[in-house]
Length: 231
Ligand SMILES: Nc1ncnc2c1ncn2[C@@H]1O[C@H](COP(=O)(O)OP(=O)(O)OP(=O)(O)O)[C@@H](O)[C@H]1O
Figure 1 (cartoon, rainbow, N blue to C red):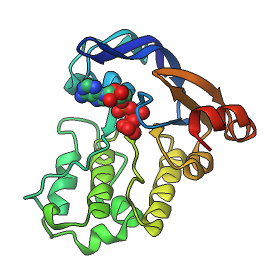
Figure 2 (cartoon, rainbow, N blue to C red; figure 1 turned 60 degrees about the horizontal axis):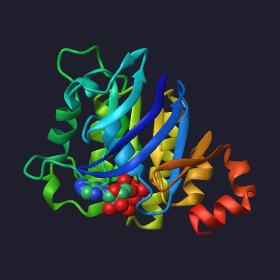
Figure 3 (cartoon, rainbow, N blue to C red; figure 1 turned 90 degrees about the horizontal axis):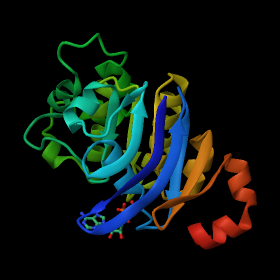
Figure 4 (cartoon, rainbow, N blue to C red; figure 1 turned 120 degrees about the vertical axis):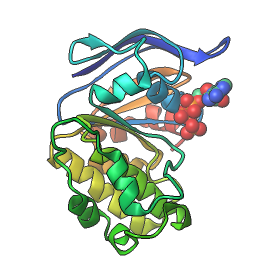
């Protein structure tokens, strides 16, 4: 469904990604692990057309490289960046409504689905997003992207800085995406979450994919865990 072949990308003269190839199948949740600076966020940005890249990013048979971020999102890809991304002066409900894509077929996700996943957002439905806690803003960013009905969603470190209870809610959220057939490429620092929710794990190191396999295979690979994940 998403096929990345020999992707290279970087900033100015510095080359960050080198020859990255991977794929994400329909309804699959692929976890992208690695140390800080290994290039995972750059990969997500390259897929979304946010950093210059060479190679092939093929989505449903069509090359995405060279298209604008807007066109890539319209083609069915959602992106939740590492930084929380809300409209601070709009309420929670208004933020969610803005996530919908006008003129598209009805989203398979309703506002009530979002409130069922994160009840805190319902309690704060009419509060301006700018006064929410960091964790609540993270939930709102996830939900707003989902309201756009993506077929594949790239999520960059959704549990970073969250209290354990919220981490558990994000894990449930990811499980719901999987259960409802949304493909996910998840950048995650917490190995426990990645192992719990993913079908397959990729490990990146120095801008390359250095491991690919099931969560169980990754856990059993002491060399990869030590050298590339510092476990
Ligand atoms: N805007 C930028 N300009 C220049 N270099 C950058 C930029 N963003 C990232 N880099 C560099 O690219 C490399 C990969 O960073 P990237 O953010 O993709 O890694 P990461 O695996 O997502 O790690 P992290 O979790 O720390 O973000 C790092 O060396 C980083 O310093």
